[in-house]
Image (tube, rainbow, N blue to C red; front, side):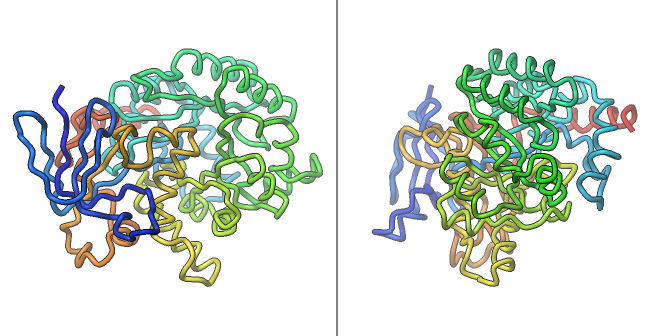
Length: 434
């Protein structure tokens, strides 16, 4: 197999080196051998096109693929179906009743639509929690993307059966598809899972050697409900249930936290999946991300599902995350563009237990790389590429996507998915579903 050379791009390796600010973003080449990055070279080099496949990245940012730390992919089917409602009304009166009608083939095509959107927007890895997850795994296998998959578990709704399905998912798909698929167990939230059930899930996760993906402290109603029932915060409740003994633990949202909650998250090395646009749209609140970062808590970035966002655009998510913290703290210096990029790449990889494999551009790492076209008028002039990627760029600027050393999108054309077929199938499903 020929090596791939990404030539003459602006490389963001996400390996910040204070000795030389130029190390953050420099012009050079990346050589890919098989599924890994072989070398990274600065400056101009010559290559023989007979020996390698050359991708001309002139005028493009070359960076690690984006990591969407928290989503529910098949909820693309519910995009725009239940807008402008508070969370519990949104869930109980609109989302859950429609989800009860979903069939495996619906989940398959809804996931394929989501993966198409994510690839086109530069997301190379996502963390998904939903049901009928075998369908999601098959889509990941077919499309070449990377994913961490969790079967959502609710103890009050066939909890034993769901846990069995979650365990089977781990046994069937963990490290499958050339190791592009990893798995976790996914207890939904403290308000849908009893402490005893959380203990059982935690025990199974340790036996299987996988992590846990859970929603925590998303809304004030959740805080009040758990306080009234257990006289604890949601973080304290799941901590006592042993959830944080799994490795890794990915806690989505974490909007309403006490100082003690923050200490627990830091002490137990829990990673947070911040979902700013979903939290804003559902009026859940503003997570104390600046405080988390200052303390040393690892924070990744997620979109949540398309029913509560309503897209899977990680560029928008980076911009929202940064601006929201600035206005929340009345401090324009917090949440820099580089911090936002880190949340969407290296921090997100670490949150999924993949920090040694993806999220940075350096020799030995998996070649999950995207090329972002910087030629658009909204990206001129190129004073600061980091800032442009966060504050000016969008999903539509992504030109090329490489996952595990394979080009799955070139010149904005996805080679692993038939886009027209996906959109046709979605339209047919919606006729039956709604």
